[in-house]
Amino acid sequence: MHQNAMSWWVKANEEVKSLQKEKNELVEKNLILEKVNQELEQKEKELEIEVEELSDEVQMEREEAEKALNTAMKWRKWQMTEVVEKRDAREKELLDQISMLERSLLNEQQKTSYWRSKNQELPALPKQQKENRIQKFKQLVSKVKDKTKEKFQTFIVQKNN
View 1: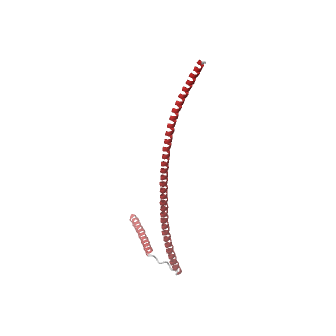
View 2: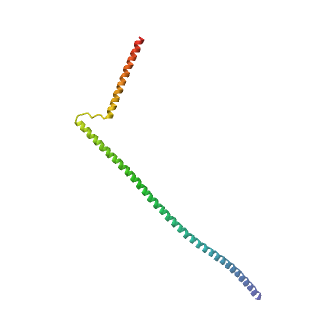
View 3: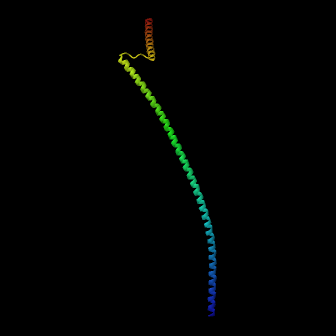
């Protein structure tokens, strides 16, 4: 029995040593895991700080973009107002010209109806008189050319005969 007790004690001692070795390994693993856990917690804090900084940066960029957009919209609105005002001014100018031409036409129509009611010819305007004189002069020149050609041809025919 003694041998049995000894063998049991040796086995128990080996079992204790094995368990202690396993405990030591687990303690080391636990220390490693705690160290890794601390590193991960530190990294998490750093990432939280980075996220907060980036969030602030994004917020500032968003505000700048909104300001730029508002400025662009104001400028575009001003530009469109300017274009519309210029177009409206041009339209008013053209409408004024149309009104002036309509008044002028009405005035000419009144003069025409006055002369027609008098049953008289409209008086020739100086430009029309010049054109008429030029036309008459051209007709006279044409007649003189024609007569000269006829006389020359007659002269040639008589000379050849």
